[in-house]
Each structure stands twice: as C-alpha cells, then as structure tokens.
Image 1 (cartoon, helix red, strand yellow):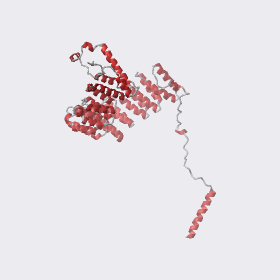
Image 2: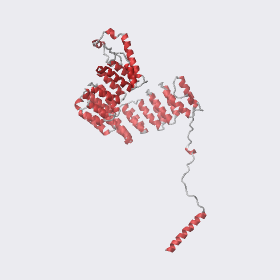
Image 3: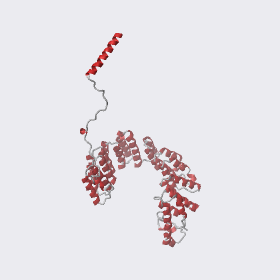
Amino acid sequence: MAIRSFSKTSMWRKPKNILALQSLSLPFSASSFFDPHRSRLFEEKLRDLCDAVSTPVGSLDDLELSLGRFRGRLTSSLVAQVIDRCKDGAPTRRLLRFFSWARKNLGSRIEDKDFNYAIEVFAEKKDHTAMEILISDLGKEGRVMDKQTYSVVAEKLVSLGREGEALGLFKNLEKFKCPQDGATVMAVVNALCSKGHAKMAEGVVQHHKSNLEGIEPCIYRCLLYGWSEKEDVKQARRIIKEMKSAGFMPDLFCFNTFLRCLCERNLKRNPSGLVPESLNVMMEMRTFMIAPNSISYNIVLSCLGRARRVKESCQILDQMKKSGCSPDWVSYYLVARVLYLSGRFGKGNKIVDEMIEQGLVPEHKFYYDLIGILCGVERVNHALELFERMKSSSLGKYGPVYDVLIPKLCRGGDFCKARELWDEAASKGVNLRCSEDMLNPQITEVFKPVRKLEDVEPLVCMIEEPPLQNSRVRGKKRKKKQKKKGYKKGMK
C-alpha cells in the first residue's frame, strides 16, 4: 500500500487536530508511517521523476523513454506531487507528456482529485491546449470535475479571451458530473464580469435565479463591477437601483466601484465634470450612512491627475481633510505627481513635507516614481532633495534611485556629484546596475544645454520669389502693353 504523505505538496488535507489524525483508518501501523527508510525511498523516487521532467535537454519522446526506465511504484499521489514540484520550472509540454505517461501506466487508478489538480495547474499556466485535452479526457472517462477546478478554468479561459468556451463549459457541466449550483454560477459570473462581459453574465443570472439564494449581494457586486469595466454609467446605476429594490443596500465597495466608473467616463468625455459629479456620489453615500474612505478620494485624485487638473486636485485633498478622512500616502503621491508634472516644484515639495509631518511612511514606489518624474522633466536638484527625504525615512532599497540619478548627473556634466553618490552607494553596500565607466568624462557623452530662443537665428523663408527686374526691362514691357491696347482700339 502506498504511503500517504501529509506534506504541503500533497493533495491530502491535513487534519486540524490530533483526534482527527487518530480517527483516520490507516492501512499500516503508526511505526511504519514514520519509518525514515520508507520516507527516504519515497523522496528518492519523487526526486528521480522530478529530475526527468524538469530537465530541458531532449525531446518529449526522450522524456518518455527516460520515464519508462523508472522502476519504482507509481501512485496517484506521487504523480500529483511531481506536477506540484515541477509546475514552476518545467515546460507545460513536458508536464503534459508526463501526465499522459502516468495515465497509461495507472489507468483508472489515478484519482479524480489528482486529475482535477493537473487541470488546475495547466489552467494557471494558461496552456489552453493542455486544458482542452485534459478536460475532454475527463469527460470521456466519466470523471467528476470539482467546483474549484471549474472556477479556475473559467477564470483563465476568460482571461485568454475565450469567454464563449467558459460559458459553453458551464452549460455542459452535467457531462462532468458537476452541478450548476450557486458556487458554479458565481464562478462563471465572476469570471465574465472581471473582464467586462456583464451582458453575458446577466444572461447566466436570468437563467439560474433559483440557484442564487444567499449569494444575491455577491452577484450584484459582480454585475456592477462588470458594467464599470465597460464604463457604462447608465447600466451601473441600473444595477444599484435593482439592488436597492431587492432589499440589499449598496456597501462601500459598490459605491467605490460606481465612482470609478463615473470618473473614468468623465475623464474621457467630460473632465470638467469630474469634481462636481464625484462629490454628488459621495453625498449620496452619506445618505446611506457610508462615509467615503481614502480609496474613494484617491479614485477622483487619480483621474484628476491624468487630466492635469492641478487646482482641483489640491481642492479635493483639502476637502478630504475637512471631511474627516485622513489622506494616505497614495493621496499625497497623486497630488505631488501632478504638481511636479505641471512645473509646480515648490508646492510639490510642500506636499511631500506635509506627508512626512503626518507620520506617514510611504512605499518605495512613492519615491521611485516621483524621482523618476523629476529627472524626466530635467529637475535633478529637486530629485536629489527628494532622495535626501527618502534616506531620512530609512526606507532602504536605494539601488534603483542611484541607478537613475548617477547616469542622469553624468549626462548633465555633474561628474563630481555622481562620484559622490557612487561612493555613498558603495559604502552602504548597494549593488548598482550602472557601470562605473559612466563616471569617466571621456566615455560618457555630456548633453549640452539647448540654446535659448533669443540666441537662435531666425528661419529663412525658402519660398522662391520672382527675380527682380531692372527699370529698362520694365519699360519695354510697358511699351508692348500700350501697343496692344492701341491695336485693339483701332480694330474697334
């Protein structure tokens, strides 16, 4: 009898307590279960199979030949553990060939749960061909598809742009002995709405209303998110109204989802309506006793920043403080970003200082992005000041900043400051990606500043003008015209 391992890589569930472990009917004694010799042999067999599957040398036929030389006892759990260990390093085609070889040798002895696990692995690897093959074989052999397996497969099919296949598989779940209950309906609706296919999801909901008891709020949230992904404000508002009429009050997630939909639509069609319409939604939230949080305000600030609405961004930040909602570091980042991009560097520095005074510790992304923006708009001095603020907060992970500032300073001709930063990084043990050759003025090309507009010579018009004629030539032409006029009068 094969040993059933309770390790993390095993497909068996670990009992919650000792009593549950004692209640299991083991086919061997407890002493044999903890036999170190058997454990070592099992680990050797597992390692041999993993080495064969993970080795990238040789064709698939060579892989099958090497697997044919395996002399250990093959079990269903051993196959699942090999797939689990090799799923990150081995190509999917080698995993598929190994699983096909195992099915030939084991046949019906491969358990349904291990078969389902193989399908989930190929779904996570987004190998549509392998998924299609194993799902087809699962149905032909009359095996049972787990609800979790269908959920994973549906999500990956929709992410691959094959939402029709995910819906078709749902319609044929009876073929795989998987019920069309609330769990599977929720899985396909969630998968479709995650990519904006809300209309298809509503069709599923209409046909399976009887299976949605107890999960209606989750279904409404999914549909609302789906219409928001399409930026269809009208349909998103309809879902909220239907939710209210069904007796389910929208929560903070629903209002934030609708707010994002409204802001994204206004960003493209009506940027001037971003602030007033957003504030109306927040007022509606308060009527339901739901206070807008930092995420609500950050949605508005993000869209205002992309629209370069500097004044309104600062107003929303002030409104956020007055309403009693404390800004987080993302709020300060969004405002500082639009200030730097619009050339208001002093005010941007004040926003950063205010964030530090509030005791907020941002993530590294805060300084990485803002320093990159300042270097991009040729304000290296401001970038160095911001880097000093970053070092004063003792965040660490300064390598990416040094890699940006040192080449920028060298190309600007400030090799002394670049050398100072290089030595500072070396003293801190920071591994830099940029080469030390950057500090050599004979190697690094220095970009000279562009001349001012007053120093640029005016452009010469290249349109060809008719050559100037002297007075003698003009006189001859005038006499010819007069003779023609006299001739015409004589004819009359």
